[in-house]
Image (cartoon, rainbow, N blue to C red; front, side, top):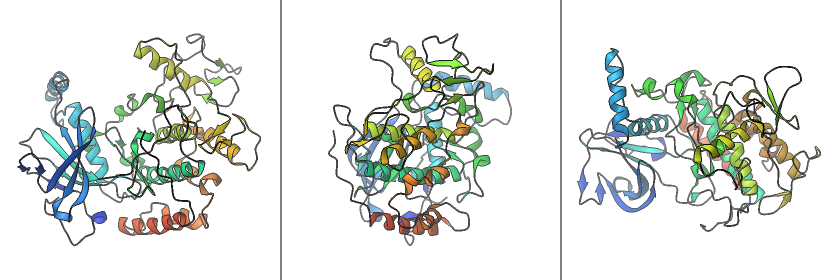
Length: 442
């Protein structure tokens, strides 16, 4: 990779630039990026709004991350010692740098209109910070409830959001990438609030064996194998309320171990567990961690947008111990059914309840779709491709077959052609959809 920008190419078709020299100018300028106000702060760093002087003042989000965190030092020393004993090992990274390099490796592979772009990585080995210049999405996070916990989006707006996330996830899964942290906070609007994009790939996982076919972007990072270990998939990383049952699995979820839960052993004598209404079965052994965890997280996100709360919640009277409360939540995710409010969306469309009569009304269609996404056993869950073809998702599209073809990732065309065809397909939808309402920040 070269640090020199190829200005003849439009920004959406450039490769990610990697720059190894960092220059400061009175702390207000990082290389060509002029820093404005801070727009975000996380556990490992900050995000600043900047303007890119090389591209006529284009706004970017500059993420600044320290390579090392004081809490990383002991773990890093221990891991380095263990690895030095074995020849040929990749040098140990701190957990903080591991996360940022994982994010860089994933974002380098992505060119899709529903995924936030990474423009440049400034990685000067003499500095203790790494800088990521990313697409600035000024529309902000997808807001989903008001101060009273009521949904603030219409069902039509929710369909638009979920449809965009489906397209982004389909592309990621096609590339062999599992996001692992889909939730409303990781979905951002473009400035005109017409497109939703997925952000935050710090806990994402890449496995070339998961790719549908030859990837559009070949892996370039020699640390890929060290960054994406299969054992990492078993870690409970992500937001607790959005984690899939196979992530929060406990072998002691049998009834004799959890008498307060609403589960019972199947009469067949197997160790499988089913919720009382028989709607969903938990396998007797922990299922493998696959792309299906993103479908579960998307379903929880979908539920949040519809009803203003998550489907599984720790009771208010629960123990103050955070670990106890997480265990209670995980127990619910693995063994209990979820409830459905009487209405959904700010337009209060009638749902028909948890098990509505199967008809063509809006509410029963949505509840049925949620049911297919929130299956305890990942083998029974819809895939993203199946979800994309659901009649409720396709509602309002004039030519669904053409839209499906135009928005499906394929190695028969390069990334620029795919983006062009995706935009054409998106315009066909936007021409017939009501413009999303501007929802003021809470």
